[in-house]
Length: 226
Image (cartoon, rainbow, N blue to C red; front, side, top):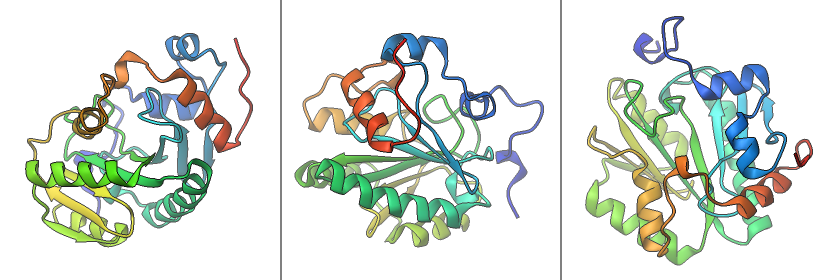
């Protein structure tokens, strides 16, 4: 049974993902910054795929359950989501020439992660050496509680129904740790530091070329300039 504390109810604060899914409207400040009328979104089998704003690299996408939960592990559509992640990993690895690094900061209660508490898994193509460095740093900061395939890691999270977790890896070998002290946008900060980038905060709306390349790679809808 899903923990009701993680399900969106009528009294919950507005969720920007839920709002965008319901209306199909890309918020005005994003349209103006990225010069597009909207971002392509794929919605099927209860799963939504979006090019992320402020991408770490070309091909940086989000895969999220359509229904509002704050941890992917608690989504009723988890099997469909896992299939989508596998398919997208293969497509984007071929398209961008790098392994897709996968991560999620799943929170037990809303408002504790990156400011958007709707569960979402990041897929971002990164050079193998960068992934190795990131994995080493995260292990130092937040040692693993479990390692295995993505589905096994999420099954492990189900065993900790009230825990905040950090999930990361390359799909075949995912690592999960349970720690409420993981800072907001922690993975973005680590990747930025190890790639000598000054950009990590998604609120600053960086990465215009990378965003548009990702939109094109999704091949859903069109990029209509405004």
